[in-house]
Image 1 (cartoon, rainbow, N blue to C red):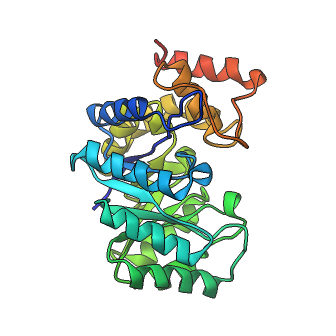
Image 2: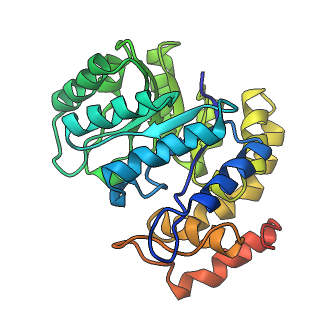
Length: 292
């Protein structure tokens, strides 16, 4: 089972806007060294929306090869075309990913039945562990809890990344789904509370810059030591908030750039963090002793 601190890893890029494979490999090693429990390649934080299909698969393959089974690798393979999602999910299985993360179909705003049939088609087409991903703030569609309960019956669906920040919803899903699927947070600010009500971990943006603390927080919470987990989470809270002052992954890539781990490049239409927000984020990194 995939649990704990799961980093939604950025995709470093060179000044020429090509994937920076050296920086990416260094990030993978840094995460494993610092206790990250699993790695998501080419999710939202990995700029999946601006990578072409070939690049997308190349990043997944590279991640699988370099991680070499030391931790699970989850491939972001969602799309708003069911056929494309199936294609990417098959490709991820072929290169050895352990699981796939499938965002709800964005922009075209399918019905609940449409989303159910979308996920069922992927489930039936590719025999690999599949994690649903609900993030209505980005997709303009909400995978309702009742639909998740239906999807939990599918053979390959093993979890959901619930990124609404609604802990009451997550608690209801834990109660209704039992041990059929795991409920994972997709919202760093509320991740600890989600684990407290039965969630199994956090697919995290914050883990990009503070992997050791996020790992320690999740380990403590999953072990039932909520006093320690709360202490760590209070340290991290300014960062949880600061990494969303603009659209993800703009702030987190700036943070990693200031930490000396990647270049500052993003692909358009994403841009470098606005100057007005830079000093505050730098100060939050400094407070956690994350700057070189």
